[in-house]
Image 1 (cartoon, rainbow, N blue to C red):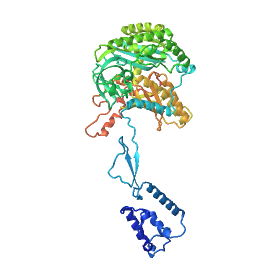
Image 2 (tube, helix red, strand yellow):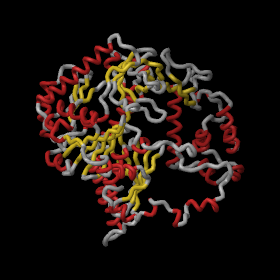
Image 3 (cartoon, rainbow, N blue to C red):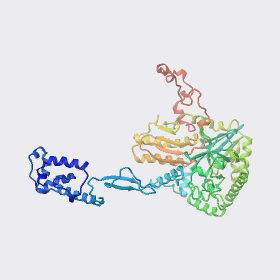
Image 4 (cartoon, rainbow, N blue to C red):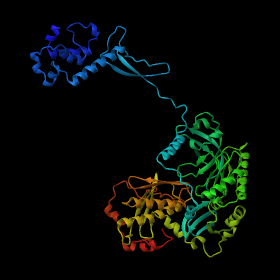
Length: 628
């Protein structure tokens, strides 16, 4: 002890540091006198326990460190250090080796557990504290389709966010939604082309066009042939005999018919190359994309949609609760076992006999399709939807329409025969065009179509909309234009302009048949009540739209986001083709920098060079109700 006490404190610190990293630990009970302690805390505590006199070398140390090394009363921090040292020694004794050595250096190391046991490593000794990490559960073998999981996650997120399905309408709300407007349907046949227009108060709101050589494939049922399956894309390409292969995603596979009981829902397990598969077209080919297919067959009728392999019965939520209750009672008696139906809005007021005839007709169609599957040729058509005129009359024409005007003898014979067979109560509303000239020109439909092809849309009050379509979405910008309001303040003026724009935007979406993601940039409003007012008006106007849509919340930038189901290519694509010079970009690209001094003449024309359309006064366009 005398030798230890005579050793300067600075040297003892140095010896303790080296011994902790180089020399092996020795048992505390057998440590010889004068051997420096391994622990740094013990090196500090030793002088206090022996009350050794300070050395002259202590003057070189900082005062704070020397004060802790001197004897005397212990501070709370010193006592805490001693307690921590004792606890550390107790833990080390529990992990000591058979010879009774105490570990003063603890190395934490995590090992991975395997099925055979703990995974071995190169440097694991008795001084190492081991924590075994349990392996994660392997779900790759039982994982289902990513598209199915994503759909399930979206529904869960919607429930967590508080978004619920729209409540069932009451009788008063249902009657209020069916606004009292004068609805007229006009059909024009020119050679092999058929055009159908829907007018509300003489304003064009919907337009359909079809040609004989490019008829729509939606609703057709094919016996397809699987060309190849892409597990990484969770999709299969199906040959339906139309040149371009269709795409069948995992979310559209009929898993009940695939027979994968107890197996994960993976598309590579359900489909193999050259396998026959019964598919139905849900979307026409658009651009470079092939037709969208589904193996969940559904046959639409006048009042309901027949689902052969379904067992769930659904009723349109646009019907009031009293009507839904009546229809549920009827469907219990007429729906066959093992099949399902989806009742359409057109079934309002339909009798049990009418619904039963609709189910029997659709069931006969399905039996006819099944008979063709047996021994059928792969990549062949089994069932074709009727032409455009019949489809539109079947889906849209009901008692809300005042009349249906038809131009063309062939179209008249087809529509008259169908209406008298399916809905004889509406036969008196059919009217064959016998006037002079064209029926579209008489109702100013061609003029409204021409204005709907423009990029800019003028509102009656003087505001305007700018509609631009990109690859990812369609963007609508709202401007006040010449609308300055009538008294009040800026907030009131902007709110009136936005409400008027919301009504026009819905009409343009229906008329131009715009689908996909749609972003509307309304003019900024300060008050939260005004923003809710505009959004509520937008949703109310969308109630007239038959196409499936969804309006999301207002983004942080004040943009209204919504989606609308894309069915056809759209009005602009039907009446236009890409420019061969600019490829649809709208600008002419040069290999050299353009001198804009000489090109400014494009934007600064002389009055004599202005076109006829540019000389029209904006007031005349704004005041035209049939215009844009």
